[in-house]
Each structure stands twice: as C-alpha cells, then as structure tokens.
Image 1 (cartoon, protein in one colour):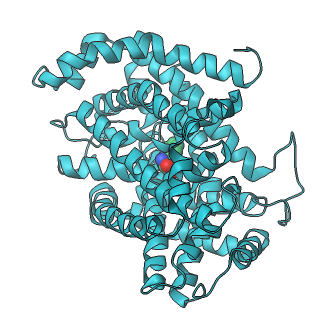
Image 2 (cartoon, protein in one colour):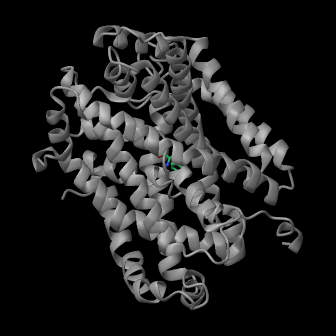
Length: 459
Ligand code: TRP
C-alpha cells in the first residue's frame, strides 16, 4: 500500500478529545436501553455481577488489543490487519467487523429513531399526563407503525451523516467533547428524581441483590454479548478510533477510564429506571420497550417534570448519536482508505444502504409490526440483526483479536506501543497481566461461554 493512505490522515487533538470520543462510542443505547432491560429480564444483581466480570476479564484485554492494532497501524480495520500480517487470513477479522457494523446499524438506527421521536414528542408536551397503560399503548403504536419509525430512523441517519462528513476533528471530536459532559449532568439530574420516588428502594434492591439461581447459560452469554456491545468491541470500532489517537496517549489508562466511566453510566441509567419500574408496579422484564414505557412516568406530575423528560430523551439521543458516529466511522475509514472513495461519498452511500435495509428492522421490532410475522429460526429481522452481531460476530471477532494480540503480534511491538516506547511506567508493570489474560483467560472464557450457550458443552 502506498504512503498516500497515511497522508493527511486526521488525529484527535488531545488526550481529553481521545477520552470523550472513545467514551462517546462506548456510551450509547447499550447503557440506557439495553443494559436496564437485559438486567431486568435476567433477574438483576447476579446478571450485573457476571457482566462486570466480563468487562474486566474479557472487555479490557480486547479493548487494549484493539487500541494497539489501531494506533500502531493508523489504518482502517481491514487495512490494519493487512499491514500487520500481510497475506494472512487475519484480515478476515476486519471483513467480519465491517459486516457487524452494518448489522448493528440496521437495528441501532431504528431504536435511535424511537428515541428521537420521543424527544420530539416530549418537546411537544405529549407526555404531560401519562399512565403505565397509556405509555404501553403509545409505544405499541410506534413499533407497529409503518412510516413513523422509518421516518425517524432516517432523521437519525441524516444527523449522523452530517456530523461524520465534517470529519474526525471537526465532527466526531467537537460533538463528543461538547455533549458527553452534558450527558453526565443530565443523567445525574434524572437519577436524583428517580431515587426520591416513593418505593424507589425496591428498584435499587433489584439491581444490587444477587440471586445465582437466575444464571442460565443464556444469561451468561447475554452478559458477555452485552460487554462487547457496551464497550464497542470485537468489530474494529476501537481499532478505528485508536487509529486517530495521539502518539502520547496512555492507552492503558484510556482503556481503564473508558470502561469505568461507561459502567458508571450504565449503573446511573439502571438507577433511573428500576426505581421507577417498581414505584409504578411495572414489569422489570418488559423487554426493549422498558425505557419508553417507564421514563415518561418518572417525570410526570412534578415541577419541571416535562423539562427533565426532555433532558432525558435529549441525553439518550446524544448517547445513541455519538455511538453511531463510531459505528459508521468504521465503514467510512474502510471505504475511503481501501477503495479510494471520498469521505463524503462513503458517508452518504452507507447511510443510504443502512436506511434501506434498516427498514426491515423498523418493521420487525414488534410481533404486531408490518413484518412482525416474518420469523425464521424463532427470530425476526430485528432480533436476528441484534443476535447475530452481539452474540455471534462480536464475540468471535473479539476472540480472534485477542488471539492476534496474545500470539500472532510481535510482543516487543506491543510493549513499545502500549508504553509509548518505554516512557510509561504504568504500562511496564501492568502489561504482563494483560498478556496473561489475553493469552489464556480471555480466549478460554470466550470459548467456554460460547460453546455452553449454543449447547455444545454443558457446564
Ligand atoms: N457501545 C455502543 C452502545 O453501548 C454501541 C456501539 C458503538 C457498538 N460501536 C459499537 C457496539 C461497536 C458494538 C460494536 O450503545
């Protein structure tokens, strides 16, 4: 490959920009929509505990692996493996990553569309007086609608495309640096309200009470899938972002900070949602609609409630949007660097493709929806996009990434990269732990959890 590919390649402008952009990728619908509804469905505390172990023992080593691969090569995910291991099948990881980016975007842009729509409606004052039943019907009307969900999905894609066309610094960096702090403030404001609801304690208890009898193999696989999804791992998102990191960035510190801050946001989201669920006698395992059926209740009939509701849907829109920036950036970097397409063309072309195929997700999110009865192997389009990406492609991608890091990559090269050529002492002392995890613990856990869940192994 010619040097031209590196020419004019952007980087983030500071350590703070690296942190907010990367956190912007991690924090998303995963925290505010998926985490609460899965924790609710799989019984609370025990699921949370497995999730936290997955973040530590599987998530962190894979994140570091991706950081290494990305900043070392400063290339898109396919080009990165091409450069580090030319002529080998390792670049299949990159190809799988690009496919996973599409699958995730198909359903993610759909859910983000619901969020934008709820933001619009809360701005219009539609949720001033609501009851649990009313909210259930409202949400049902959205997911079974024909053009409403599709229209908002397209609005989402237009916003994401517009930001990405502005570039890495002027688009991704500027937006995440401005909006991530806002997101933190807003979620804390929402928590204060939720935790002061009468009966909130039961919700907190649900989140923190550990009952191991709930832990089925499916629950464990789901917790692992969630850890991948949450931290944007296993498909080259973090590889692509790391390719824009500054040379002086302490990547181990960044990994730890991003994983902790992301987990904090998930907990804050859980603490906003479960107290409400219990305070209003709702069902914690209500599924994908949980967020939309509970949050408007939190803020109804209180001073400034409607303003807080707007704040909540605004913060969720921020989270979803900054996460999608990173998903689509994988595609843009790939098409512009490997196929010579301009940034603008790549952004628009991919948005159009996602808009078209994404309709399948929008119309199959609910059994009563337009394509709700199109089911194969027990799942419709929406569920297949989600399941195939989170539970299959990301873990398999993650497994190969961590194996590449642990066995195929040049160890001295990794040490140089992660210690910034020996200038970081933190790196030198903690690296052996990460090598150990990456070589033995992470791959073994991934294989066992995976085989167990698809029924080939009974633990
Ligand atoms: N992490 C984001 C969330 O929790 C979603 C996301 C962004 C993602 N990039 C990704 C998920 C890459 C998997 C892979 O909402």
